[in-house]
Image (tube, rainbow, N blue to C red; front, side, top):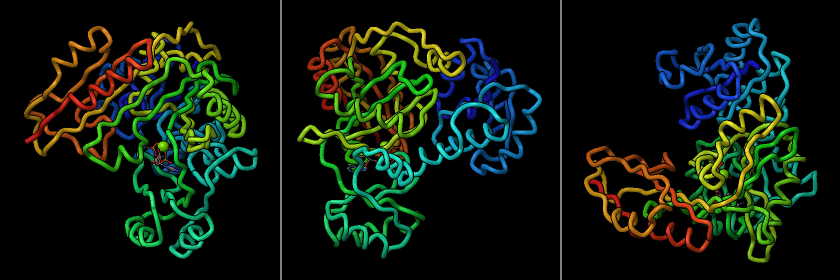
Length: 405
Ligand SMILES: Nc1ncnc2c1ncn2[C@@H]1O[C@H](COP(=O)(O)OP(=O)(O)OP(=O)(O)O)[C@@H](O)[C@H]1O
Ligand SMILES: [Mg+2]
């Protein structure tokens, strides 16, 4: 089994997927835009080869570089779990005549309007929306859809350039803020809680699925610095309250033509119990959610993803034992981290349920909270009981404080 894996070291969790591929017996050929020497040595040792291209983002050029360089290898698969390179992976598969997601499907995962059009055609509930590339198209769509609205890029990530708009005055202001975005999606604002539906599928059927709850909704967490974003991977997604979202999720997998690999969907649960689609990625979720799945199930889903794509089997007898919460902390103040408060008490109250902790050490420069979910540190807690897990999450949200000066 020979796998071409795009970006084996970045973002950081790709290093674990690279390890997984190697551990299930694949020969892994990495593709990246940095020299091999810049790939950390603990990742390099899993690689049987490496192809450097000038840019992963100039797709056609990258295909022209990579395809001739790998043709002689007799590859079995091209895999990619990093959002901006999903289309490159599909183009390479087509060029090399390998199985897996085709370009037309990859585009549907990347372009939020095409994505929603597919789902509407399948009769699934998505927010009313329109695609707009000029201000007058935005005004026309807003008129038709009504307020409140969401304005966001057609191919967005990390909630960048995403705004809630209350009325025409707000729309005028947001139009100025999104001038640099070539095309936006104008959408009905869906009120409700926000969840994920994540899977590892084998031939279109989930071999593993998982639901996480965002606390609060990402749009709020990403727009207010004082918030500590949190998320809980729920122990068992197959409970009545989540049923509308899980059913929607399974129908979305079919409509999107998912084959084998990770998927990451977001959905809203309205106060009336209705589930509404948010978006779906043909890749693993970022933001530590994969690690949380591991803590919730005591397995190694990095490796089982690899086994699924290489050998079409998922070999973990997952137990669904725990809810696993993550809390991301943003320092108060600017400059360097100078103090951490509340940690002893959190350790005391969590006891063995504190399963991960990674805070920037005193003296390090704080990070720009707008560009990183991980922020200035994170912690993981887990517990078999939801109320206890949520209590520990809330404790870390309110009582763990990092200061910068
Ligand atoms: N139609 C909508 N109704 C309500 N909230 C929305 C809507 N569209 C987007 N949002 C909010 O904005 C956030 C970001 O939107 P979306 O997930 O589509 O973009 P993204 O930039 O790809 O996100 P990310 O990479 O952070 O997952 C959502 O998580 C949600 O909180
Ligand atoms: Mg999103």
